[in-house]
Image (cartoon, rainbow, N blue to C red; front, side, top):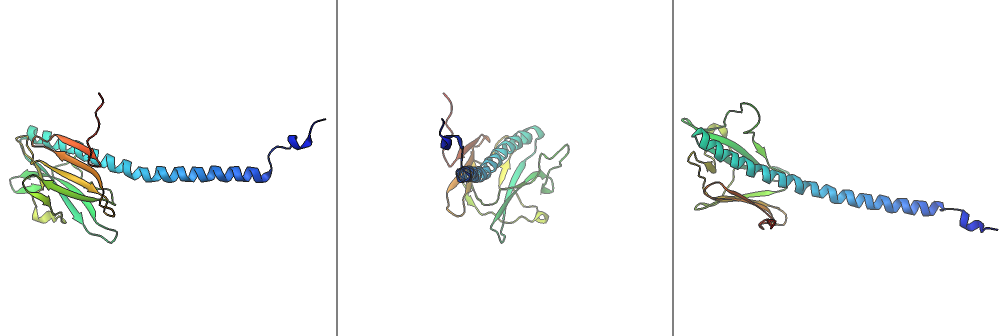
Length: 189
């Protein structure tokens, strides 16, 4: 005769404990994935800026006119927000370029929860302020029609800890280097 105790299966308490463990593991996994999405968006933001800078220097050479990027900081109750505005040099001064055929020169709104530092070679660290379009301010980063740009870098910092998240550096010819956490990417051999 068989033992009745071995034929019973799982008790209700065993099933509830198993279900609780699964829910706990799922919630921990979703928390980790959720915090990683900010890092992914920030990396996409940095890569997008790098590609737009390369496009701006190419467009400046082909069009025979200077382009620029004006970076601004706006103070707010939730902390500072950073924006970028693409500009083109006209006879009357700097203004936004036409957006014919799409959103190529669309203004940038950087991810909140970060601080931007901009440094140009020979000038040092720049103070970012709010932009008044009526005054037609000159951009901090200028892509010359000759194919040159003042070497510099933009750093993304965590404002709470001061940790460097990303550094985007460029040379005189506009060659851009992306440095996550300030470290060079390892190239495959």
